[in-house]
Length: 172
Image (cartoon, rainbow, N blue to C red):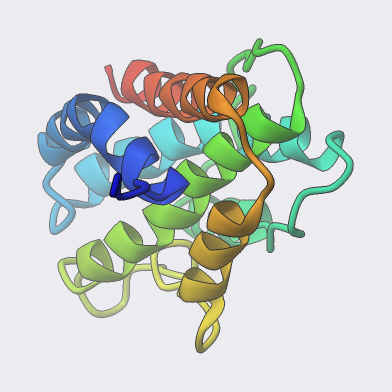
């Protein structure tokens, strides 16, 4: 009997090195340093709004609770405007959208961990924007419950890899 590997498990495995590259890119920022923290937020502000806008145009996806306003709020508190977003140029499909949602929503988990490094008195609405109770598990279940074939999974991987790549380039 062949065991079926979940779509989420396949996404995680296919994008592990992409995730590591993003972690390495953003890991160079010292979030206890005001200038580094500002640069960290600016880099996120180049990527997140581009992906969120792209996702908003794809019908059939779970609604993503935008963190763009929290990011703009944190930057404003640091005396910065939102930078122009980078281009997220991926052919739109529901499958690619789910892959990108996996990355954007997964970054909330890392954000919560990173928010612990931000000194008291520094704005942290963006990094502190955690999932609602059960939200992450529900998202993963929704991805795994999509009726998929091999082409669908490949497109989801394309969307996830493109989102990771955008964040990686933004951190450079």
